[in-house]
Image (cartoon, helix red, strand yellow):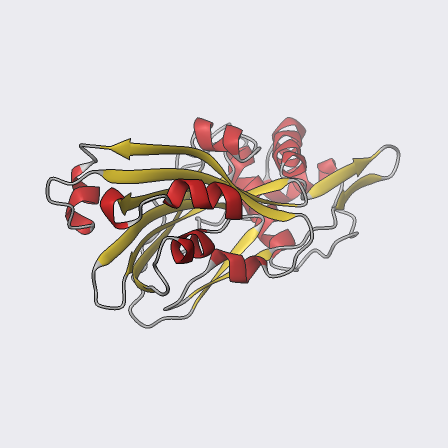
Length: 260
C-alpha cells in the first residue's frame, strides 16, 4: 500500500507520465521522507534549486510542493534561513480484533473526537443495509472528526442499525468516544470482523475538513464491527491524514486494498 514513488529525475512537464501533477509527486516523496524519519524534525531541507535539480523540474514546481507540505504543518520556512522539517508527532493507530481509537489516542494532551452530525436514514445505501443485515430497518449515521493539538487527524462516517443502539448519538456527543457511548447504551463488547485499507488523494471536501492542501494523501479504512455473537454492529469509513497517522495492523483476517 504505497503511493507511486516519484523518480529521482522527472521531465519538466507539469504532469508526470502517471498523470499526477509533478508537484504532487514531489510532495509525496518528501512527505514520505519526513514521516518515515529520514528527515528528522529540525533538519534543514535542500534549497529550491537543489530540489529542482534533483527532480528535474522548474523551481515553481518545487515551490508548489513545499507549499503543500507547509499546509500540512510538516515544514516551516524561516526567512533568511531556509525551510526546515517541523516538529511533528505521528499518531500510531493500532487496528486489531478490539480496535479502539480512544486507546490509540491514549493520554495525549489536546486529543479529541467530536460529533459533526447524526442522521437516521430510513433507506440507507444498499451496502450498509446488506452488511448490517438491516432488512427494512433504518440506519443511524454518525459523522465524526478527531484532532490532536488542534490539527485534524481523521474524518469518520459510521453506520449502525438504529434500533440496536438507541440513544447512541446523544451519548457520543457527551463522551466523544464510540466505545464509551456503546457501553452506555448496553453494548459492553464488540470485535473487528474485517478491515480494508487504501490510500488516495483527498477529495476537495476532505481536504477542507482535514485542513489539507490539494493533492494531500489520506489513508482510508472501511471496517465492520460485530457483537460477540456475530451480529453486525458498525460499518465505518474513516479517512486519516497520511502525514499525521500511521496504521499498525495486527489481526490476521485483515483485508488489504492497494492505492485507490
